[in-house]
Structures are given as structure tokens and as C-alpha cells.
Image (cartoon, helix red, strand yellow):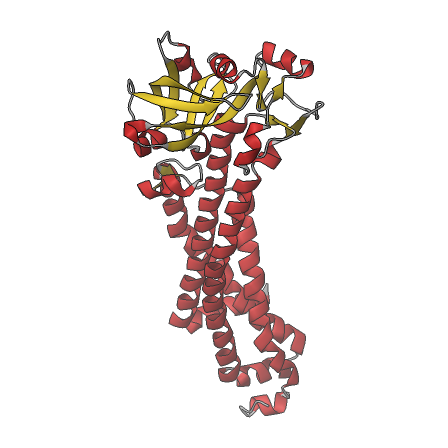
Amino acid sequence: MLALKLAYRNLKGAGLRTWLNVVVLSLAYVLIIWHQGIFTGMLKHGSRAVIEDEIGGGQYWHKNYDPFDPLSYDESHGPIPAELAGLIEDKKATPILIRQAAIYPEGRVQTVLLKGIEPGQTILGIPSASLDKEEDVLPVLIGRRMARSTSLDIGDYLTIRWRDVQGTFDAVEGKIVEIMNTKVVVIDKGQLWVPLAELQKMTGMKDEATIIVVSQNVQGQEDVSDWKFKDQKFLLTDINQMVRSKRISAGILYVVLLFLAMLAIFDTQVLSIFKRRKEIGTLIALGMTRRQVISLFTLEGAMHGILAIGIGAIYGIPWIILYSKTGMKLPQATEDYGFALAERLFPSYSVGLVLGTVLIVMVTVTIVSYLPTRKISKMKPTEALKGKIS
């Protein structure tokens, strides 16, 4: 308790120098927590959107299916096995058939993926119910990004060309019946959604599919014959890796902030030891051990971090709460980044994030405060009392 009082008195006596260090440290606290909250919110929002609109509780892939290899689409289809047919009948899974195709909007040619989905499915957030409308032509559902890039609107017609199971080219006229507003780019850009039964009939692939998406309520799925199950962890790998890479690049900012704060504290400790050498000699002469004097100076440095927590809380907590409610408006260009982001990004903070940041900064401050004090162990009380330091 005596050491704590002495440390506080010495910090108070340092005046402006103490408060400059405290303000810099508080900025490090607030900016690191705020920045990490943005990445956490980005990961949570992106994962939730992808789960709701694309992957559900997981997917069964045909053994030949590779989403990164367009050449695999011709062979990545097969009959739905009986084990999975039961899930589909119970509305716990929905099959999707994927084929390559070409469209001709306004006389232009564009390669697309033609995806068949059941209009009555409720596993994914795709508004497939609009494909159940009675139309003289093939009903087509597209996303708003696809609509913008092709200049298509509801009610527009377009020619669709594809190859059936025998490799024969065929074409049909389609009509845009709905434009969905989804945050998931993967199911939007370059995608045409049509009724599953119609696509199976057009391609000669009766009762076949490319992937089967299961409900989030279905657990413990395993591979079934030619169908390989991919769980949420596997399907969210790209999102997790993207956010992880962003965190690593942001670490450069954290290092710079901490370096500035630590440099200021280090210099303050060195200057303090030099100016207070008579005081150090007096304390040792009065009976304090060198270890106790080192602990006192280390405590003074560590208290910069404690005071910074209080100062940072005064202006940081209201700012973070306000930011969490209003979010950060993102430019329209972020829609083409390939990441599921809303118009506003809302940060997400947890107790672990705040405590972890505080702990890292406090440990760093304490270590940096201790390093200059090692010189005290080499001081002789008689020389220190004379104002000398070796």
C-alpha cells in the first residue's frame, strides 16, 4: 500500500509528462478495441448471411463437384440417394442442380451458372417461391448485382442456352420474375435461378442434383455413397481466412500505436531514474531493498496503463456504444469485394476482446517500465546520495 501511494504521488508530481503518456496509452486501448470489434462484427455478419442464404447447416457435394473448377460441372451430378431423399421429403434438405449456360441480354453473350432449386424450399433465404408462378416461358430469379450488370429488370425476357446430359446444345426463352436483394455475392453475380424440376427436364437429369443443402437443425451428418458432406466450418473457411488476414494487416497499426506509447514510457522511466538518483539513494539508505525500489519504479510505469484505462473509458465507451448502434456506412464499391456485407457494418464487442486487449497492453507497459529500472540494482547508495549514477 505504501508503494502504491508513493507511486501515485510521483506520477502526480510529474504533471504534464504523466498525462501525455496516459492519453497516448488510452488511444491505443480504444483504437485497438474499436478496430478488433469491426473485424468481429464483419465475421459474424458475413457468416450469418452466408449460412442463411447459401450453406444452411451444411452441404452434400457430389464427388465430382468443385466450385473452383467450372470444368467439373459437366460431371458433377447424380441421382439423389435414398438416405438424403428422406431429408428432402421432411423439408430438412433441398437439392440444387448446377449447370453452365450462356445468356444473351440485349444481344450480348455472357456465361452464367444455371441453378435449379425447389420453389417451395425453406432451407435457404433465397426467395424461390417466386419461381412457382404460372408463366408461358421459363421463370428466372436473379440477384440485384446480376440485374445491374446485365441491365435486366422484372418482366424482361432473355435467351438461355445450355447443354443437356448428352452434350447437345439447346436454348429456351426465360423471363425475369423476381430480383432478390441478397448480401451473398456467390449466389448473385453470374447466377440464374430456375425451378429444379424444369432444369432437370431441360438437361435430361431427372431426380439428379449437384449439391444438397441441409437445414441448420440437422446435426451429425456423414458422407453418403458418392456424396461428400461439407460442414459449416469447412464452408466458412474462406470468410474466416479473409478476416484473419485483415486482422494480421491491422496488427501493423497496433504495433505502431504500442511502440509510440511504450517509447514514451521508456523515455519517461529513464529520465525519472536520472533525475531522482538522490531519492533512490535516500530510499536505499533508509532501508528499502533494491528490489523494493525497482518494484516502486515499475509500479509507477504500470500505473500509466491503469490511468489510461480510466481515461479511455471516459471517452471510449460512449463512442463505441454509439458506433455499435449507428454502424459504419460502407461505400457501394464494397458489394463487389466478394464478402457478405450490408450497407452498414456494425461492430461487435465481447468481454474477452476488451479484457484481452487490456491485458496485452498492461503486460507490455509493465515490461517496458521494468527494463530501465534494472540500472538501479547497480547503483551504490553513497554515490546516489551524491547525485552520481554509474
